[in-house]
Length: 212
Image 1: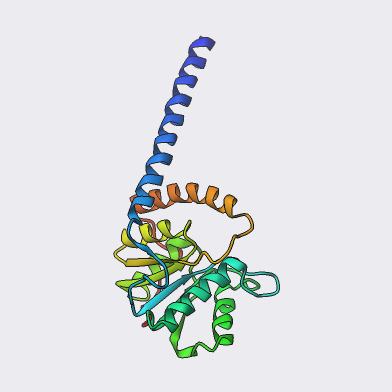
Image 2 (image 1 turned 135 degrees about the vertical axis):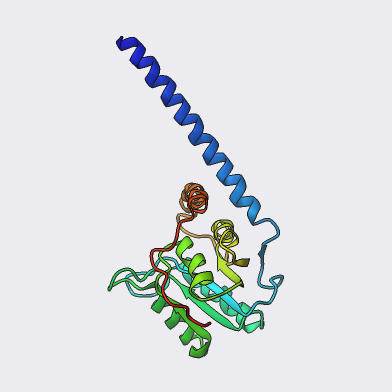
């Protein structure tokens, strides 16, 4: 009897493991394929009215991390090249003492970006929140989106599956500390994104429409 239970458990374990491997592999292909011909440099990017800047970590000093600063600098380059007219800054402000969005805004203002061209999304807690809110709260149908190249396919995949056409612009301006860790973690985030799209996940908060 005990041996039979062990056999059933092993069969179940192998089945679950095989299913997980298939889901993991298919998710990589689906997400990466969604971004084919959709990632550009500042020079090759098309012009759109709005550039979405996705949040990233902020230092204890309140300054943007290297990754976030590079996203902002890339967005500024698009703006100054007249390839975008407005910034939608979307990041995490889930705690009183942690605010990616104000850090992003302050960074742009210090570089003489007019405040009237900056729109803030304080509820961009993750990539799904940012992209879906860009469509459902800020009313965008098309936009540029700026992030590092490892992250862009997932942002594009989520956007395109929620009715928002986006063109990714890579902000890889340097070699980043822990970049290999971020790339490894991103593979699992792609699986999460595929599952979220399949079940129709919504952002944590939506709310009234905001004009950009």
